[in-house]
Image (cartoon, rainbow, N blue to C red; front, side, top):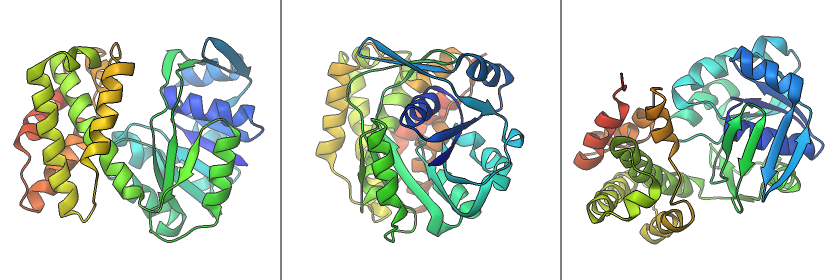
Length: 302
């Protein structure tokens, strides 16, 4: 399959690298000259369970490529989605599908405006990926991908996509109720990522604090109310199980939002917690705890 990876960060390199290793033709599309140069010169090395695997890759800006792709997977930060999708319009043919595996809300709508609702796919993943340096990714055990359609209609292309992901070691399932899983991950991220960014705490430090755990619980409850107002039915038990798993298996992990704060980069707080707060306000379900956390997490550290 001819695949474009838009956003060659940790997740983009993990997915694109594994798809390339499985025999697909992958093009890495990024805006950072240093990343592009390194990937073209050194390829990608993925280390899993202490075992490294390497593959040469092709990377460039969107303007460096000119043939239509079968699939384009978007991994950029949410605040870059609109510009990123606009830059790849010339790579979208009549049969090209777009897939967002990004955090937050609103990305699928942006893709649908360009690919069309019927060729827009949505999903989530919990594969861990740490960017040691450009071209060098480490990943832990486990991880899965859940994918579905933006339109809610069945799409034959999805069966082939799931097969392609599984062949690459990216364990994938087709989900009819993909919005449920998206909102459950949204609740997880809104609670854990946002709080960690505000407090500067690792996942394990949050787990060791009764006060922090109470805030996490309040944010999850607020998010569930907003999800229900959008006719999306989520499982409190599954969200809690995901949190409990993180407390045990990722206790030393700094969330991506905390890493962004420490590096004085813009966070995705407005697209995660902020999106929930806005929808809640429109539907008469205020989320005061999450609103306060989002304001603090979205503030740039100087």
